[in-house]
Image (cartoon, rainbow, N blue to C red; front, side):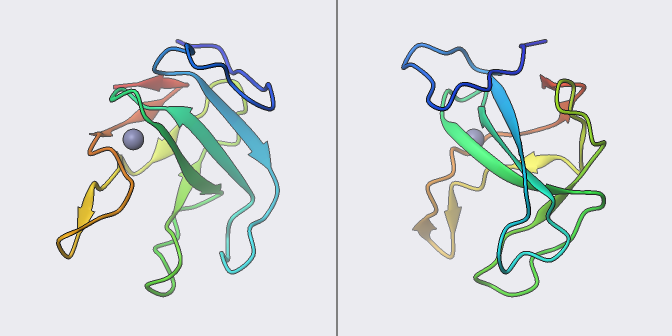
Length: 107
Ligand SMILES: [Zn+2]
């Protein structure tokens, strides 16, 4: 398991699995209480919104909120995370990784 890294900015060489959980709601995202940034297994810097339960995006401009176990050091998210790389034929900035984040571990 990679330790949480709560530095404000990560150097270039942080390994996949590096993550941080930051408290706080996000405007326009009901049910969101925090967000998580991470270097996903594809080596990209990705992020998801977190809340007590999964909330599907309320409109096309909003994001999903993942269900989160409330742990900052060993977060478990449900359902799986899918960094969609393409939507409607357009690149989204996502990396294409699809997997689970369980107890702070990416697989
Ligand atoms: Zn990703």
